[in-house]
Image (cartoon, helix red, strand yellow):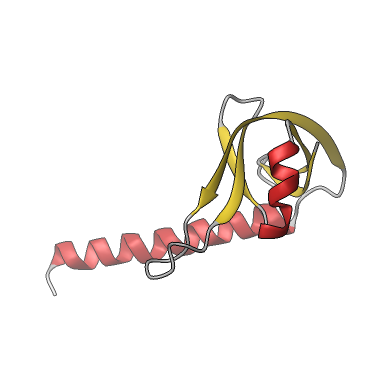
Length: 109
């Protein structure tokens, strides 16, 4: 194996493990204090199934956060009727170890 392949392999392996470690620590040591925020639903959509099962679709909504980013939340097929009626989503958030917010639960409004 040449030097480029070795360096590339090390970057991928170390980078993947470091990312997993950081995300895991952020979730594991999250604050127990939560806050509830209400966001408007930007779009309602369906996510297609796997390559050979495209007809199996999962309902989802897309909402815009206070940082002008969009987030997608998937629901089970049982929530399809509730999603059609909903205009807002209530999100329970807690702050992670590194300051990133973690979604604890969601409710359609």
